[in-house]
View 1: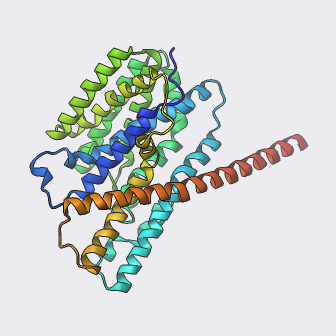
View 2: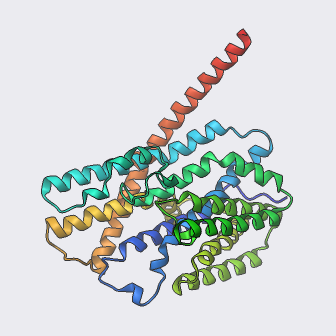
Length: 372
């Protein structure tokens, strides 16, 4: 069995492009350029989320599967680490939007109170709002995918059990993953009349269940079967072209979602053959801050657009290309600042507190058992 190198920088870079794709999916509507008349590529930007889900399964399997096989996987520490990774920024964006709503009210800027339903706040704070508990896009719509990710983290031990049981049969595992995708697609269609890749705020958790497993399955495939450099490069080129054409021509939702798997697989195979990793890689850094980009792009645009339109009167109902690109640069800068000053420090603090609490709790449990 061949093991991937610890560092897979191409997958980190892909996270940035997936996040950027989602950004343009949401930002294209007020854009003065009618880009949808030329291509459906930007309108298909919602599939950046499917890339994230498959990537998440792949990367977490890469990081934790070997430890689970050796009996060294510590689920409580895993949950603390994942909570520390996603929760601080999630709560911060809710607080930011609450301030935006208050600021709009104070300044007399028109806003829709129904977009900020107080009844949905508990589900949002618990990160279960995409489990059917809060089917509204308010309180930072993109965060539904964080709720779905949280479900996958909680269910991770079950995923690991499946991956271990089929360790020597990765093709069967991939078949089960694809079959589960089609099954959940049928379930979502029967419940809501839409394909699975349309699942978002209402029941987005259904979308990640099979896609996370697909990511684990292609990781297992890569561990079992190694592609040579030329094969991996050709496979990536073909996968990328097919993926871009599928988005450009708006192929069936399910096809586009599934086409993310070979793209991720071949990229990882290319990383297997990389002999060195640049110390300074700006695109990789953008991939590292992709979570902040994803979480901030909607509230950032909401604030910037309303300031330019309703407060300063500099734009009308549309945004020119130069202004849009300027907003993008500013949003990337804000995302970087958020990553450096909020995400990283809070992640370290929560992990340190959580690990300390867990160690103390376990020490007390051992002491009690020895006392008995």
